[in-house]
Image (tube, rainbow, N blue to C red; front, side, top):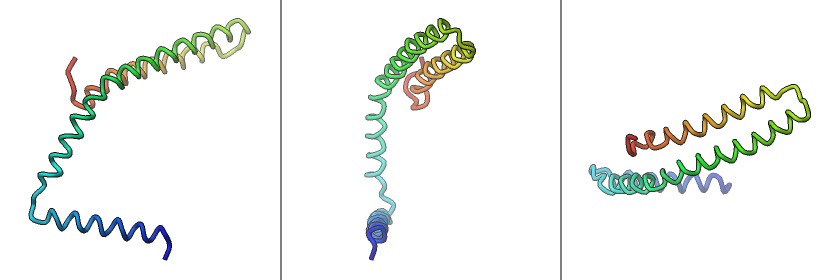
Amino acid sequence: MSPRFGMVLAMLCMVSVTFAQNAAGDYSAGTTALGTVTTEIAKYVPVAVKLCYAIAGVVAVVGAISVYIKMNNEEQDVKKSIMMLVGACIFLIAAAQALPLFFGIGGE
């Protein structure tokens, strides 16, 4: 018997036991767990927003240095590099603004 087959068999047994326990329609344990997870995720969203802003700042500084070097070397694709840099920064800032709304936290 392969280890993969054994893992699949164990997972099926665990799922069947879980369904057997909830056969009577008592889902209070699952509802409580989902509520707990929701509140825990809500605590991390402000940190993730600040992390997105920090990453956008680092991308902007490193990109600006890269564009400066390309301009001094008179390379041809400076405009393309600037557009990619601006697009990346706009995406990161928009993602940081949309993250709390995605999780339904705050309406600022």
